[in-house]
Image 1 (cartoon, rainbow, N blue to C red):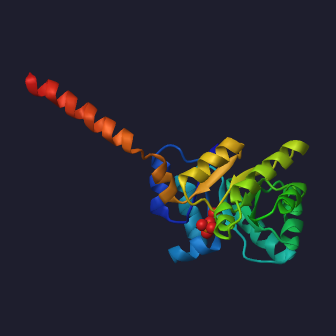
Image 2 (image 1 turned 90 degrees about the vertical axis):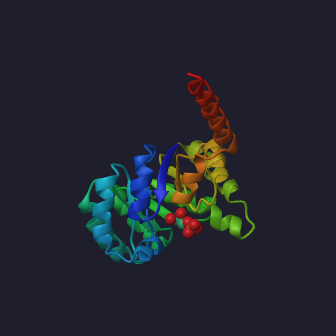
Image 3 (image 1 turned 30 degrees about the vertical axis):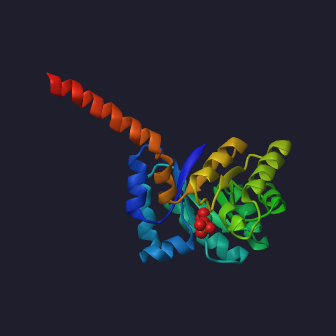
Length: 216
Ligand code: G3P
């Protein structure tokens, strides 16, 4: 299971990277807009912190525009993965980018048929959004099971990158299903470490140890 952080915030990326469990970064136009910085400069900063796949999303919605943006981002560094929306023009562009050996992440996936199309186009990653499905009373994790099964049935190499993760159980369920990657906001990564029994147990170990050392 690879762990990506879903943010464009440099402090969060630095902190997650320092934990030693970070494999990559995903961004999207909303996350970048929140930072209010030039995207090219942000990418340069992220590239210095993380040596792994970094998704940069295009904002064009036509084939030529998507390709133009994609080639510009891809030329920056080999670790840049081009994030493309799951629309017809997007998948046409993914097919071409795959032929050019440029890695892609097809985003805004909400159905197994969409995921099948992305695999046929040769996408490196498919990003199904579990939290946004849960938000409309549809089990997002069922979609992950279906995609993992479909890709196994036909040995598609497209990696299932679980996105729109809202809490640690999403990660646990996705890993039980066998998804390849989870991209999580920093708040979720932070919560993965916590357990009250760990805190209580450690406090007891330390206080018992102190009793011993106080006796000396
Ligand atoms: O980056 C795509 C996805 O992870 C967005 O998540 O929380 O905006 O649904 P969210």
